[in-house]
Length: 115
Image 1: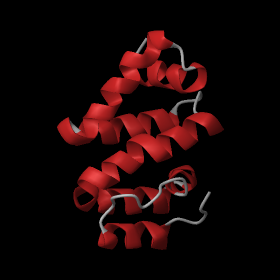
Image 2 (image 1 turned 30 degrees about the vertical axis):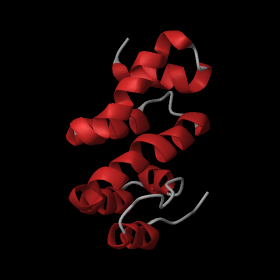
Image 3 (image 1 turned 60 degrees about the vertical axis):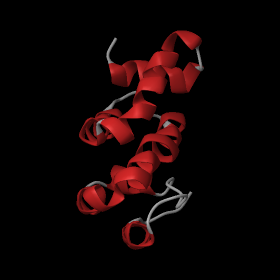
Image 4 (image 1 turned 90 degrees about the vertical axis):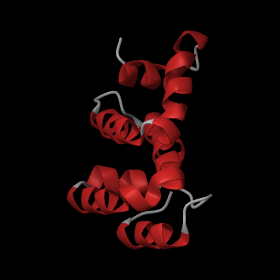
């Protein structure tokens, strides 16, 4: 299995055998933000990305990326949200938490729906 598949399996089942993938993804925001960006996009594109996975992707990896690297990634996020209705939907599940105000304002201005 690959990282995306294992992370999705953990989100859907909460089985301990998939925990390492979830734990690893949580470290990416601070250690490898580019890898986290790639992971977010690959997960969103997965046919296994249902509503449960989508909500965990928004409130977990994407929110973490915006918290720790928002200034570096916000232009990519805005561009992707303009081009992809599915990514725009994903943004609707991100909460402000520790996201810097100027980054948060851009997220609020681009997303179509808050959930």
